[in-house]
Image 1: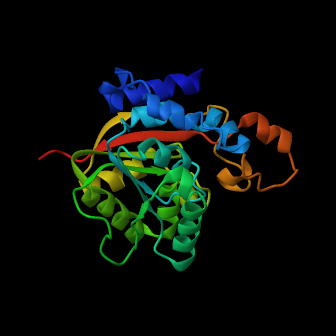
Image 2: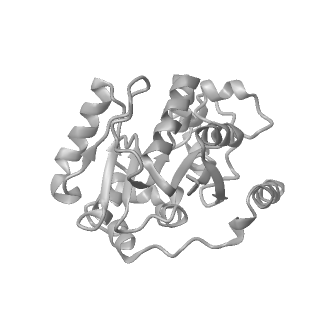
Image 3: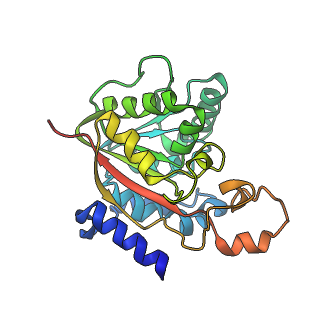
Length: 266
């Protein structure tokens, strides 16, 4: 109860507009979520990742150009790419490293019939952005800002600058990541997978973004944020193997921040 009250209070103080409900998911999004080609394992994670509510909160809709930073194994790609296929554009932004780029291209190629043709705009921490400036409607990143922080402050700052540059004025940056409570040691951001709300806001604000909304949809009050192997102790990774597995399964996936930023129109 105390956790819920604190979250509600924090959200109301940070962004009064949060009282406005997110738009209902589009029919195209609903269809993508129910597609039988999604694996049972991925469908099972909907209960923790809330893709319909999350994407509706970020105001993702057909007809848009949507960039996903670091799509990884393609969990969100298999929702976004089919939803935008033929009516919009999905762009993958993997790391420019040889390994990261190869993995992304392989994932996209083996799903080409399902996803359609997907553009790839690799992210480099040292080279200029490969994505055309001012052409994206949405830039989304799911559980990746902590990786940027672990790679170094300069890499994190460069990524947010690239996100800002990619978006049209009025475009939205949607961020989901594992929440590190503000009162906990910031040093945990370098090793635990958790990251503070204030850190994400600092990076986004420094790049020029304005925080316009926050949703508790991906919050998990069972998560105490202090596990032996960080966030990877919890499902789906279970870094401790069978040790206390039932306990971690009962907790579920991590407590997550869901933040919406906008690139100001002027």
